Length: 271
Image (cartoon, rainbow, N blue to C red; front, top):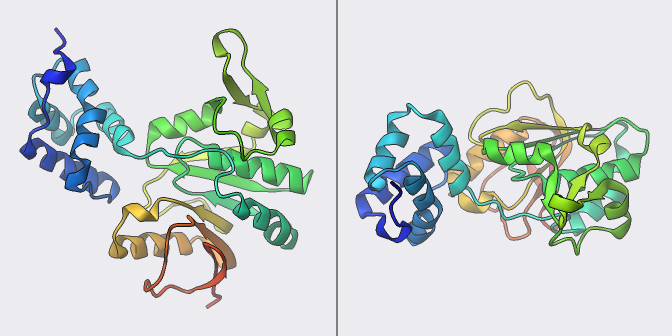
């Protein structure tokens, strides 16, 4: 029998265990100020599984015998704040300055969450390049977020930054049970590749890229982890390639082979 949600309290010891679990899995440290957030996001899982408390849930996660639940917990603890054409100046720079110089651009949308950024890039590439060859990949640590991206089904909200012609050309409006939703056009979806990836690991067998969008994720890491992540990303970025980070993120003091090319935009210095 399920317990009332309010009766399941996240005690300090269980919170500490969840901190360790998530940091080991993602590299992200959940500060003590995230106690209520963690409790809120995971309490339903404890209840759904019929467990008596968070300690039992931690046992389940840390014993490593339920990979599906571990993936579910990582997904729930990962922030998925995103929307189409976030920070639109980056898309203008991509269209006006980056793409004209690339005969067959390869772009990686890293930590893409549920795919809104990646499809914003796909629309930009298709509109700007027409029949020219381009490659676009999106990745996220959460398998659920990657599955969401592949489906390409979204609620009709936070679309104020999407150019109206893109909404008309690349999005199908839902009807009936899907009213209030939009589906990314299947032809565009087929041109995008999504994969699961932890930024603290090497992105193997994906080739090199002319541009990487790594936006609004570095704020969750300390400088040591930022540098480690960026070194791995830069190993996949062509010399002279473009790196886009979030407008609120700084790479100052990280001692990396990058030069500033715009607001939250860098280029890899050739060795």
